[in-house]
Length: 351
Image (cartoon, rainbow, N blue to C red; front, side):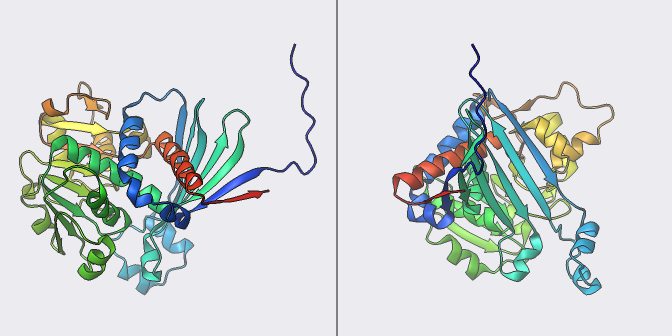
């Protein structure tokens, strides 16, 4: 017999746990970064049994300038920079977890002394689909993205790493390698045309590896084993002529790689993607741009994912595309909530 429907209670209230980024830092977030990388790898290697999706509202640069009513002078001053003005929502639902991450981003925030992006996680009880927690942490989102590069570096055993970009993700990645257990890279080079070396070095702190800062992308990339791009540039940020023959490239941003390099990896090297279908739907990263330009559509070209056990046998060079998986975001938010609660941080409220 079916249970009788519950009569809604007027003013039905919902208990929630609120966790801030300060709560996570006070709970020792940086002391648990190895757990973040392990959870990221475990989730990427799993075959999700639930549902996940991503919605992106991303006006063009012209539309953004109109929306924000930028003056002609301001528009001219930002030529060549992708405003990266968007609202992303990544949602996941399974028997074990439900929730979403919402990220608002605007590259122009840097001129206001604000971070480019701001992330908010909302968790739900899968049995009732009622919200249970809010986690506000852009750092957690950056750590998730940086963890991709850490996993790839371990698989390719890179000793010299070049990072193009000096924003939140680039600095988080450099700092993450200083906190992880086990051997890391020998040298990390960070490059941005607007780089303030002292500020970047201060944000990263002491490192067990040699940290090099430069404004020259060519100087950063030449001789590197691993290239990580984490920028908001509107066009590719490196030249294929700078690369070692066996380079590994991790694309964390948008259209950052020359299409000729993606072609080289597709025909004689290896393509890897955390979510190929999601990448092609999103349509803005280098792999998606290359794919859309093929006529006829690519056939017979394998695109590996993070479930492969044969990294050592994959032909170089590699192009690794990371678009972000919603089930990973929800899993990390649940982990962060447990971390804060175990340490006695967070606030319980009823709405």
